[in-house]
Image (tube, rainbow, N blue to C red; front, side, top):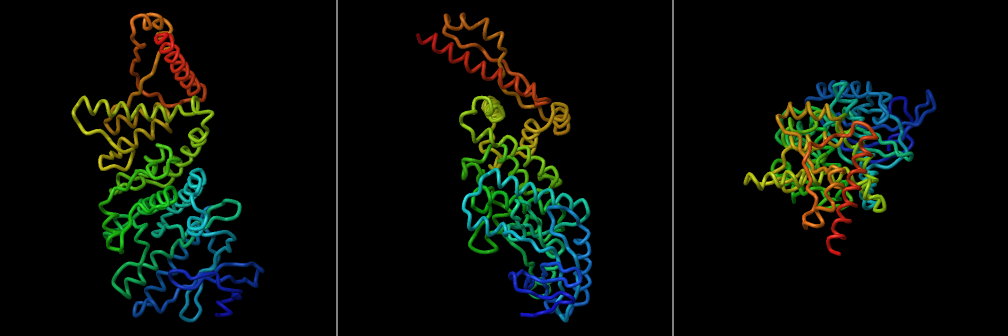
Length: 414
């Protein structure tokens, strides 16, 4: 093991990276421990000058990023044929190890981790930096729950080095976006796809795209539609199916266009998550789930009346329509004005759910019992929550409706 890299005193080996060894070291000038990631310049062969120049350019760009969810880069240098990056020393665990060793992760924890990664990516993308290699081994979870993205600025170097040697791109095929598989130019939406793959795997403990070899995995990435996460994990709420589907859209224009929106939706989903996990509070707290179920039921009824095939699986079926998913997400997370604007933009009608007028139920309850007919329900557009009071009022109406229906049935039977 080497004992010195530039001015840094090497204390020990932390592990093997894609491009070289990662060391724990000490900066004697300020008595600070650092992690040093090394990259062998000999991999570049005859193109070493161009490769080294690109390495410094990428490292400097990554060094300008200052965000709580991105590892801080302190220094970059060269020692003999080894280039290195000195960065903050993180005391925590790689997400890859957590996924492997800890078994099923609570959905709430998954959403928290991925939302933090999305926030870090959003900041990097706003500063013109695309990671290109988002995967669990490049995510560190610190002891206090803080998440850090590592290896910014290095992914492009890894691809360049291996292409020089073998004519193919080194990467993580399981997490590659379709455009990466096809060798196209990539942008921030490629990172979003890779994060979607990671999210799916964390929720289900299964990769959305798998195969016996690299070619099989790449084919799956380009062509396969995975099962909805909730089909593999009953703890996944319906809303999260749509979020995953939008992140994993094959076409870039159908995906989230920026990671900030993805982070926002993940946090919104996390806020309503306890409502899905508390059986004792299911009557009042499951309002949004009932609303979504009603939207799906309405869509299915309309499809049957027109003879068209309904949307069968929530978000990831062959019939998945990203515009519908966008609209449904908007209904659940945006205000009514934004929903109306989105409807005009997408040239779609706002989905409707059954709502009941309490006064109508009261006035017709006795008549319904005598005639043997249940109270009729009218259809009205879904109103997105504009304030806590209106949301609570809707829940009260729903509860009142359910109670009255039960009373009507009991009276009728008796």
